[in-house]
Image (tube, rainbow, N blue to C red; front, side, top):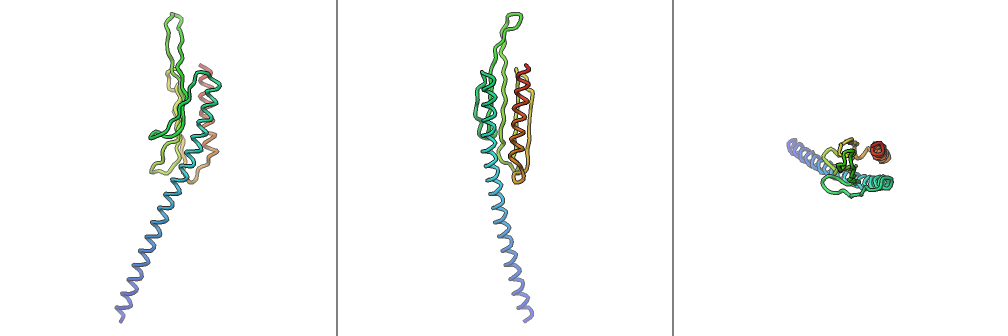
Length: 160
């Protein structure tokens, strides 16, 4: 009789272990879905903010053309222009300027990652990267970072 009691207890423990594993798997799946949802919300909001900032920059410097970026590189935008200039020797030269800001796709590290590059007159002047945990980050902090990058680029472009 002792054995039968112990056998039933072992079976109950096994069933409880199975139930707890299933509950943990459901919780993990829900957590992964929450992370995906949060990243998508950040991506949409920040890519709209990038578009607004870059279009306002282009309004201050005629000749810049806006381009939407989406896909495996991320989501965001860029403005670029080609300038022609004659040197003192009479030779013409072409100079390329561009600023690109993107929200990178979700990865295994579960972070929101924004990246940017700034080129002024054929010289890469800036390479930016900022990231924070998806579930713990603040949209306002990212917006301020994007604003600062665009302002930094505008100041350097105007100085050239």
